[in-house]
Image 1 (cartoon, rainbow, N blue to C red):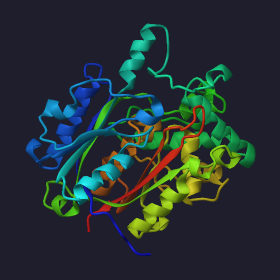
Image 2 (cartoon, helix red, strand yellow; image 1 turned 60 degrees about the vertical axis):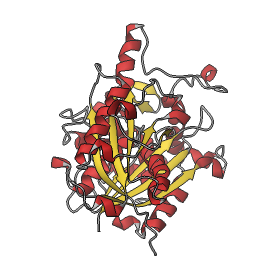
Image 3 (cartoon, helix red, strand yellow; image 1 turned 90 degrees about the horizontal axis):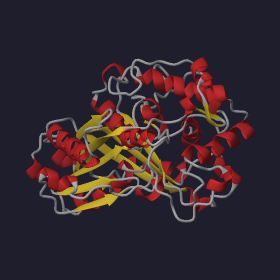
Image 4 (cartoon, one colour; image 1 turned 120 degrees about the vertical axis):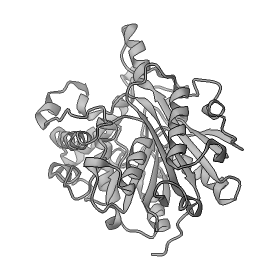
Length: 398
């Protein structure tokens, strides 16, 4: 297979993790960007483009502040814009920034995503409510039928897979347990030092059947930033460059979202095909998989849809321990959204960069040359399917 790899590389990474009750989103974004720029060995004066990564399309999220992080840092950016959809942040941001870099309109672009969901959830608790602040969307018809939050309409997908293939709650629990094991190797993870068993998963409260509490991702504060540049420029910077080897994009609406088969799979096919073709790689070349994991079933679907196991065999595959430490395909090695923190696909993307750089500490996968990072979300119809899917392949600089 021939390669048409994009001429792009990640040159710097900045992470602000954990509760940030004393920081606004803007402050977190500015700090993460500052860390990423310093990590690359660059100065603020070197950054001539900026992208703000937000969940706008799918989560009802809008910029909650004026005076963007670019001005706070004094970045001499020639452009600044907002992009993102649901949890597809890094993937879409790279695709957008690529045009400026490849056309010579920018030399170094900083991309940043920040959330204050945990802090906001603490505020709602004071008023006797639970969960994150949420903006209602026009045309949302599911509330009267009990669809109040993402857990409700994602649960349809897990239930369908169970009905068709006999997948069990214990098998979904195996995903939680193995990702928690990874988190226990990651001091940055919210669930660091807090291992769980299948029994713990089964005893955790029901939220929406078939999902227990431990099937559901974290509510988090934090920010992640990275500096994107050309491969040639990245070679001369402070940290080992991480090449963008290939990207692909899928959309469930392209295949009639209302067909029942789409409640047991994700829009992986085209995204996977495009990314592998662009990179010239095969599935066997991927050393770690950072799969978007807002709920456990999404991990299971992707393991099947990418081809690590056959459709319907995902339950047995995870039950056998294939995704945890020592497994055949190390998955969500920082703990993922389930056990580390939830910053959309930036969570997995940052971990992929660290794995390829060899900077993952105790959880480092030996000889990691290629990492897969995925994103999805942004329902076109709510309640409904998580629609978009993004695939990004990262690898060590040649």
